[in-house]
Image 1 (cartoon, rainbow, N blue to C red):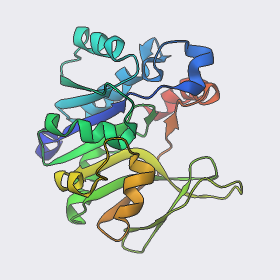
Image 2: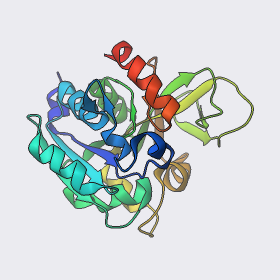
Image 3: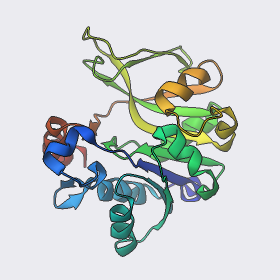
Length: 238
């Protein structure tokens, strides 16, 4: 295990409303949806701990007290800090709001509603070798229409982000795991509320953003159907 990874903070974006899951979860935030009798967020934190991450910042929002009380009572042998948004800020705004809580110059960010069991040590080495400002884990799928595709140059720098399209075709998609340097904060929009995916990443094209390709499936729990699939697939991703 790389000693570098132990110095790197990880941030999990877990403040989303989970509107599409309300029919099955009610008021419970989607990151607390249970899989194998434990919250999905618990699985993400354990994955980070298993990789050697020693400090995690949880960006909470919707039902923040529920998430914070759970992890305050179940710290899992890892340092956990909370960055709460008092109003909806989007994925980018939530990360910007957590800036002062992030203590490492290079840091990992994960979406709280998806899991791709990438080797974070290899991802970190890739990010540093490319001297990237931002790196995105990208996974190859048979149908990018539900995610939006990513086009890369031969050196794996990202050339374009494609919006979700109605035509189904294979390609690379954003797997919801990122590596940033602190300088990324100076490249963010001035406003407090914005999206990483739509308001920041496209602006970084040709400015040091790279795709780290993995031959790994990833799952997300954003809809009732995907939540059920995740319950079935989790064993395959262990």
